[in-house]
Amino acid sequence: MVTWVSTVAFEGVEARAVDVQVQVAPGMPAFNVVGLPDKAVTEARERVRAALVASGLALPPRRITVNLAPADLPKEGSHFDLPIALGLMAALGAVPQDALADVTVLGELALDGTIAAVAGCLPAAVAAHARGHALICPEACGAEAAWASADLPIVAPRSLIQIANHLKGVQVLARPRPGLPEAGAAAPDLRDVRGQETAKRALEIAAAGGHNLLFSGSPGSGKSMLASRLPGLLPPLSPRELLEVAMIRSVAGELAGGRLSDRRPFRSPHHSASMAALVGGGARPRPGEIALAHNGVLFLDELPEFSPQALDALRQPLESGEAVIARANHRIAYPARFQLVAAMNPCRCGGGEGGHACRRGPRCAQEYQSRISGPLLDRIDIRLDVPAVTAADLMAPAASEDSTTVAARVAAARRVQATRAEALGIAGSPLNAHVGVGALEEIAQADAAGRRLLRDAADALKLSARGYHRVLRVARTIADLDGAETVGRIHLAEALAYRSAAAAEARAA
Image (cartoon, rainbow, N blue to C red; front, side, top):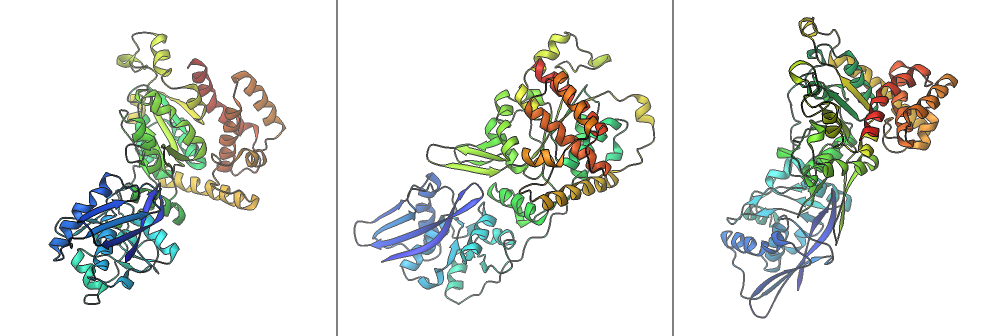
């Protein structure tokens, strides 16, 4: 006789259904797990055996076979422990078999029979609800799983004995409640930045349209300080975006206590990060920084200090909005629609004036900037040189506009974009930085003077087709901030001013 228990295997943020088939048959004593398991799944035999003994149930001296179907799907992770244990308990009559029907189970077992937390409970709960199943998960993951749906029956036991008593009706476990929302610290305010009015304007445009941004300037000019103020200008996550971000964090094991937040992600990896850390991957593929920055901001400080291979790996995700990890036997895709914000010095010496003046001349700057490839620079919409801050700027009164005031204008511009995308039937993200080329030509039509300026500037700056369209995207955002229906010459002139430095850098690289 074969006992069946349902669980899941993760492919990116997708939880695919897996059947745990347990057979206890006569023969030489053995405990085999088949169905393309990895090392963690194979080691489940010893954890399950010890947990059952600690719970007062010894395995019989018979041949035990556990099959994880479909057999051609790779199985990774320790969350298969609990479904294997419950399948064995049902086969041995310790729990009723019908109590495990239409139930998705996941959890890791400790040697004393307690159930430890696992990554990916939220995607598993969403998949269980879609299949019409109930969910059994560790107690530590119950608050996370409860966010999937108020109608999803959830049991979150602390140990094998608890879940056995619940399934037999001896003890009834209450449904866990969703975790309390995160109460993070207040975002840094734009009023703290003295001077740098042009950079603040570029930051507002980038926030309104979701554009990629690169600040270049001498050390201490405020590049990192400006970038850290960007999250305070962005609107909160919508419910759909919040679920997407939470599912990625759940798979990465970063959703402690089931605490969600509607604040957009802001990821700032160190420049020593590897390509796998940025894009994702490894022996057991996991989300990288770009996936964890989905619907938010990825800030790369000291951009040329990153590995050139790691930076060039960002080119495809910047266009497609997803990070694809390909292996010989499977392919994983994580959502990665992020906004790239970067900062760099003009050269390794600093490139400023006074103590930061370059001691090697133009060649130093050329060698340093050439670490960033032209194709990556071509994908950055706004490139701005940030001048050094003077003592007069630092001694001046604080700016009158704070982040709340600027964020209101950003939210208004984004509402305009959303309304326009809905009216035109544009699928996907409505932000100007993400709409398709066909829709862009319709929403960013320039007037006659603007077309003449754009044609002349494209020839003078030798803009690529991508660069041409990105100028249109930035100009459309500037027009949205101004409340203009048509993209005019003044909007294109400002967008070209932000692009001209990037075109020069691309030619130098």
